Image (cartoon, rainbow, N blue to C red; front, side):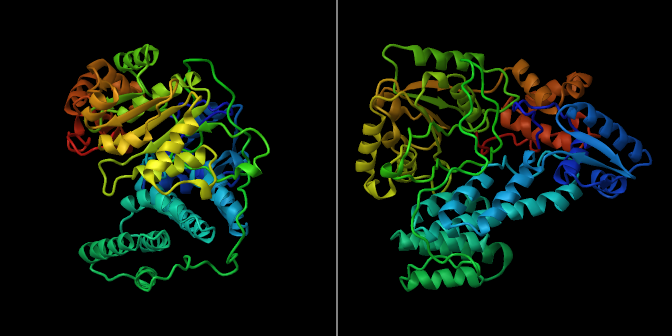
Amino acid sequence: MAIETDQGLPLALGVGRIRTVAAVLISEVNQAVPMNRLIDLAWDGDPPARARGVVHNHVHRLRQLLAGQAELATRGQGYVLLADPGSVDVHRFRSLVVGARDAEPWAAVAMLRQALGLWRGEALADVPGERVRRTLGLGLSQGRLAALQELGRRLMLLGRYGDVVTELTGWIVEHPLHEELAALLMRALQASGRQAEALDHYHRVRRHLKDQLGIDPGPALSEAYLAVLGGSHSPAPTASGRPKSAARRPAPAAPAYAGPPAPRPHGEPTPPGPGAGPYIAPYVAPYGRSQRLGPPPRIAQLPPVVVDFCGRDRELTLLDQHLERVPQPACVVLAGAGGTGKTTLAVQWAHRRKAEFPDGQLFADLRGFERPPMRPGTVLTAFLRALDVPEAEIPESVTEAAALYRSLLAGRRLLVLLDNAGTPDQVRPLLPVTPGCLAVVTSRRRLSGLVVRDGAALVRVGPLTSEEALQLLGNALGRQRVEADSGAARELVERCDRLPLALRIAAARLMAHPEWSLSCVHPEHAGRGGGVGG
């Protein structure tokens, strides 16, 4: 959960139960929330005798924090946050989803993508209290999955089966037992002519259901399986009252979108936008060239920066030096173990130097260490869409698509950020060859094939220094708490091997348990060791 000013600057909310109080008031904006409800949710139904006074103090602090942004008023035996519901991502998400229900498929796709783009990870993950996460967060997460299903259905109606496959693949990794999503993916694979993959996915989900839940596939998955076996290309079932078919139209500008952000001074990071949820692949709504009325949209697909980024001066300097080399390399590989913060570093640097790439930035998570990894052809299709190529003109052959991609980059100055690459072959078709363009690739491997054959530069990313790690822990957890127990903080930093991901996990656990000392978190709790991404 985060609170930002109208200018996009983050407000320092701090840690502990003030986040719980803020989360409840924000989620129920313009509605009076009784004191007893705030106490119940903040202490999981087991409040101390001083709970009422603690909530009063938190409300006083929130009033100071929100001064000039919103009003926090007393209403009877409770409080109400008076603000524009459109300024709250939760309400914007719900409004867009509701609006998509009665919209034409092409308009619904744009609205649902904007709604899903508002997410920044798991709902209320950094808010203490199991009850508040269960009461508020569970419904939000279910709404997110429902919006994703609806997006898949609308894309199927438009015949954009490749979009459905790309959109759902990463989500199913996170929700392997979600039968409706699996059924949608199977239908999209079948409609794309990939029957064998559809059947393979069915059997994989069926085994998961049997092994983990002891149940057989339900109606949605069984019907999709029979449709694939029978060779049926029928789209996914639609809810009653929704359009059964629609002519393909250009997607409208997403509602409430006010255009790209104004350019920021060179070297200054761009504050995060409202949506930093798990990024699967780059997308734009397809526009035919004949339908374009003005200049093509600016391509700006970089994920938002991490607000509390710190350190990495050596790596940032090396990246700057490679950018300024003559001749400039076409590719820079950031290589390091999982959890070292390669992606965060790459995104931070890309935002700082994006003025050097006025034609925009492309981004893709290649999921190189997941099964299945992202295919180069899938990424090329998404990139070509972003570069304004109509769907019908995108080649099916990876070789032809790569050639078209390189041709479109000719004469442009564009940055391509390829995250989590597994092999050189996965990356090579996506590399720009035009002077002025640059690919930044992150990987757990050195990708020596790119260095040897393609002239890529290599930057090794290791653990943070001790001081950088302490600073990151203080940024994430709160400087007061770290400085109050500096000895334990230094021990925790070393137990986490000074890895940014492990430190953030440890900080999240400590935020969820403000009564713990810093010495309570053990390495296994902090995600130490291999197997963590980043």
